[in-house]
Length: 446
Ligand code: HEM
Image (tube, rainbow, N blue to C red; front, side, top):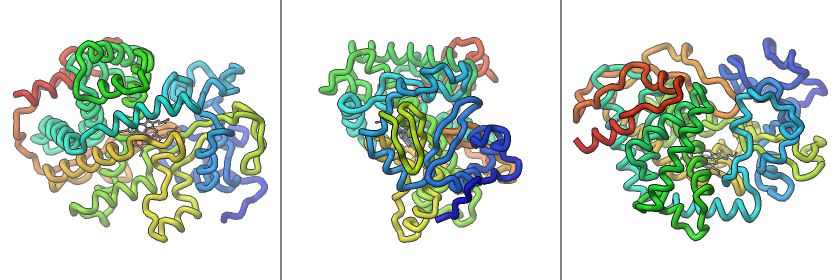
């Protein structure tokens, strides 16, 4: 165990010097080296005082055993964000970028007890019906489409041209989404995460999903949307919209980053000099050391209590640092002893990720197919010049420029949308017509 000085001193340059001792989990310094922050935070003990964005305070659990205790004790710690005291007392700035992620929505992630069980069962049962062969085939098809768009150039940004788009397309396929609705879903999710007119993007996303629900009620298909709808939980239209939005939003960003962070590892660590079997290993190492969701698992104490030596009040915001727990001394020992999947990167307890298997399968197929099609792909810039997106929750690169020997597309690339069309559409709040999902659907039927 680390020695615990009574008054930990922030590392030189750490803005904790200026935030009343709370350590900020945002800004370029944190994005550049979050693990340095986690080592420092461990000096506080199993939990530490952090700030998620200016004015948003939380207690971060950094210790593995303490994190498990929290995640598994749904009697003492609740997910329903309507308990969030600081929000209820008006202390959260209106423009806080983290509030939309943490604020309550009527979905499984923010539910407790019997209501959570009911919503979660509908999700797990529907996701369990996804045929793994079909999932691999559609991932490969999407991967081929994306590669056909940039393969002849001999260079690409593997983040924005590949890892960011692939999950969106695979999800549209899984959920049985037709062209025009799919374009709006892609627009909505991309806009939400890119923060360009996020409010409008959210409105477009929810509108498109509501339309999808109406469509599938009238014309059921062989897809996750229909299976969710037909589940014995008998979800109402409103519940359907919220669970579908949860699946799409909770799935897309971490999946983009699991693909991106694993590609980054494969392209920057010589130890993985590409051979088929090493993709699985690189995914595991990424999950241990650079997980896509670094801090989340928001919980609120049901009553005033003492936890891990700290006095907590009902409604205090607690977050779990999956990334810190994975790399702490206790778990490093378990990893060395060969317990390769003991990390917390998929969460744990009743709210652990219900889509671990399809998430991993999409990642493996996406990376395998990319290396099969572009066998000499390599980084196009020095690895030290790569930058990571800021923010406390997700861990993902801003860009991953790569080069390779140009390849001829098996099929003609789809016509490119006008440059900057998506960004312009986001700013104006109008979804693109004939957007990327429509192009994909046209491409596969050519
Ligand atoms: C197919 C892709 C994915 C889908 C559809 C998906 C869906 C979900 C859903 C619905 C939840 C909430 C479950 C509940 O509250 O009962 C969840 C939680 C979670 N997921 Fe995933 N997920 C996907 C991929 C990933 C990936 C790639 C990661 C990272 C490796 C990840 C990490 C997590 C974690 C840590 C939680 C717990 C979050 C919390 O408690 O706040 N997920 N996921």
